[in-house]
Length: 190
Image (tube, rainbow, N blue to C red; front, side, top):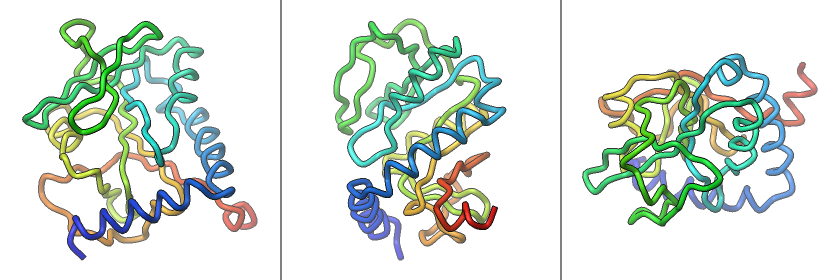
């Protein structure tokens, strides 16, 4: 299946799942795993997006970062699909980008490229080679090609596949670590 078709199917699947009772249980499990992850605990700075509908909410992660004394950076994207990371505080002014993503309005100061750890969003992830299907703009793949840094992605049970169900291209950058929600079935096997 081509990326465009698979992406549309995956958006519908994730959207339906995020409205289910099971979603919040998985999200809480993902937070627990992330907050106990050594790479997360040891990173002085974290790059993360401001979540949108049908994504794992990132504000609890941002708040945890602040409580742990970490600096938080959010992406600012540009028309050429490049991006930079801008320090995010409670006072940061936000605007909506042409992609529909909430981003910092001012981005001339307080830049960090790259943060020590990036929490990279995506629609789907694969166990084989930690492949990621993004939202289609290619911003994170371009950024990681230019600024290699440690990466983690967060995946619900509906976003994780043993093998990639979509084509993988040379420019697609794999993720270092995928934190997968443990389901009831996984808990029984522990």
